[in-house]
Image (cartoon, rainbow, N blue to C red):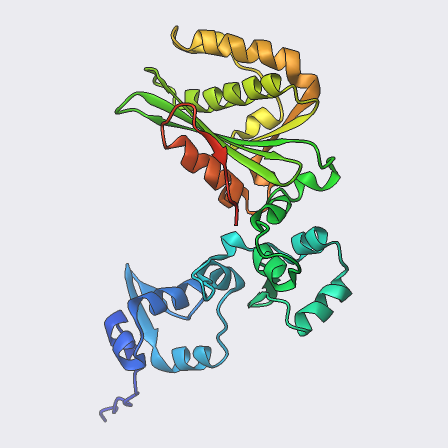
Length: 303
């Protein structure tokens, strides 16, 4: 007697293009869903999907906090790089969490992104400003960008945010310094040197040299230098012998100035600042270093 084979309904696996068409997605949306854990099958190097599983998953889908923060844009097109966290705004405004919650309910501007709240300092200052509108507002926001390093530092302690850039094609080393005095006055400075080197870190050393020279010239009793060179925040030693002859005189000057001034200054890593290397002040120092101009010195407006 012949046995009959029972016919089973096999699931239909969808290709990427078929899923995009069926659910009316864009390629970017599909990639975002995959990144956030959408169920799928990887057969070889090819993606396959079960429509029923996808529809069920989408019913409860919420974008990840990380994605929401990364893709956030406010009405002015600003990203969260220009915003500060709740802890930062509490310190900047010197208020409690309870006060903050009440102010938000009464209309204080803030951005809710997923489960977190973010604040634009200048928007808040503009919202509560009284008196003449002719007074520049931007200087009051500077301290927020120095958080949390500035929290336990006297207000009159100057901050120097520095960066260097090297162009191997033109053999030019540019430096950019952003000097913050009294938590308000902000000055941008540039310098450039023509020098042939195989070590790109030389431009960072030049930025440090310019910062040390300025500290000595201005006779600062205390100062804080902020750099993207993390090892320098732990130990500041430069071995002269590892650099080209044309660089050695500058290294020797750095070592001499460091021995002379190290009791009056400290070096901090930019990662300790709010937003790290995306901090507004650091980004300004970086852009100044790429101007490759000598002796530029002018006030900056920080927003």
